[in-house]
Length: 402
Image (cartoon, rainbow, N blue to C red; front, side):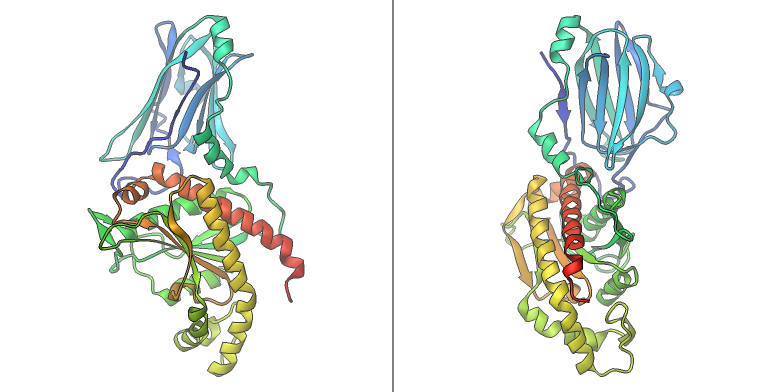
């Protein structure tokens, strides 16, 4: 007997077939809970595919649908519930990043089928769940939330599982989608790096903002070019404590795959302060400190002092990213923790990491980066890593040199 169905669809959709949001918006006019003979049918029309699961609970009898995540605006019980075999219907946020629909059943019904169809051209998804009559004994035996390893891996990465602290204000995280505009980045099989990292950046910012502990800002929110120095300026102006740059490279041989996380190498540290002093405006070198009127030597010394704290903080953030991505089930590179002489990591006054999300030269990595549903574990892993890192930073704050 089928107790439940868990479906996390891995469907490739065009990079800009839908609005890039971690939320799937419901089409209330088309979505219905209706009678189907002695059973019921649930048909939900969504703007994009999302991970979901379906199960039943007893005492009282009800059908539960969990989603990551649905925006219910525009939907109403009165318009959607058209079934004598269902006595009530309710829906809404379950916790940050999660949504739930509960249908009270007028009689014992089992899940006969459940599936989500996605239109490739638009990314629009339709979830269909059909329930058929069953004996009260069979219903009771099959009821209960499923103990599913894949769903639990995603749930463990949910930031709501981590009790937020109450700092003076939310920690600011700058999410930097690499490339853009005249610089498309790597390209393979019609997939552009600038597009997929922007999509993930917007989804990630949504997840961070729903955590309640952090607030995300984007260095770009559309397909335009932002110079490297301006990316850091945007982060600094917002008061960012962390800077996360997202990329997806491609290799000629196509052999490598999986995600990796970079921090600035020792060699990069040697030249970073000099490079920043040469290329940035004096008033924009360190947050809260105007270096206008000071020569390069003084500016360089002050930036090096700042890196005594932000450098190790960046290393801890990178380590947390590797752990978070692995915990969310994301495929990692054979050497996931790396250092490099990367200009985008030069800022001295906030922790900076670069995440190579995968390689567009790998068909499997391209597929993982090309739809919201397959990017969801990346979003979950990065969000969980940032939350844990933010907690550790807050705990260590009293020990930081003032």
